[in-house]
Length: 401
Image 1 (cartoon, helix red, strand yellow):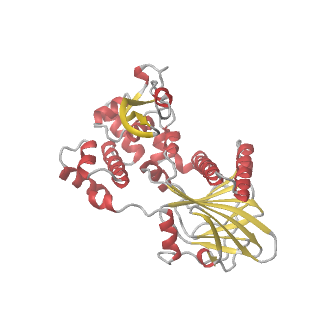
Image 2 (tube, helix red, strand yellow):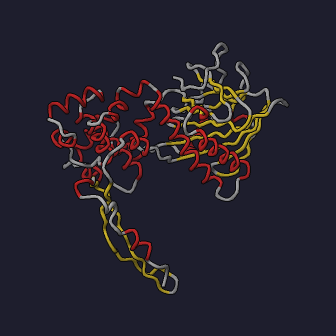
């Protein structure tokens, strides 16, 4: 006999069983539970126990659901020790988000076209679009390029570096993240060039500082499982920083993010995100909002900036692109899952919205973080590695565009 099957039995209990049927949102996601049959310590065969449909609770926080999609598909970390004077130029990293946390000392972050930002312990700095930038002990210093200084790679996802003279010491943890989900990419495209969060000024100050201290301790000691701990903590910090910007920026009250705040349109957008393969029509979307078709269509277009059905098709094509990139499916299978009776019709819609064919999307996967770093190291589209021109002034600790 092999391992017990109690795990399967536990999972097959109905999800959200305390909710009434009309309170739940059914989505086309299924869990297939299997039982392994063992003989002399080796798996002999496998039989299906149950096919269960996942039930999600009602949409109550559309903005929170958008943040839920910020699941990292790739991570890389660096612990840095600097001594004044020092300046480090980080090359652009396409489709990546960069996080900087100062654990001791202070530094200036400089990006082209935006005011420089002072980062101190307790601050979070995000560069959401992977733009090349400089971190330095002061403005105007000639920056060393990241891949031209000695670094110690401790694992595939973690390295340390040291740079500078014999002055005051600054230590930092820097993270590089990828997000492949279409909802995550939609949200990230709306973010400013730099997000600065002064955690001392937020109600969550104590737990954020505790998180930063724990991250710093894990980075110093690198005990077994340390990389995983840092990844989880960084995930929380990134989501918090973006949530902080959404809460405090006036620009989030309009457009797509503004639509998520609307009590009628926001939940409908979340349901489109949850169920991209649903056969949505204008009538069914309006029914979800408890509005007439004409009133819903007008409000959706006013808030989002495009018609509801245009948004649905665009979202479906992005979801289909992600599904193709995962591999293991044919274009015909994906086309059928999204309600297209013919593959040519799906191909035309896909290319019209995304500019490439489904076959090309299936072959052209986003480069992984190691590939991104390798390209930057070899000088492929490095750019923006020289210091930001002097004259920019250090801002206060508020988010900046």
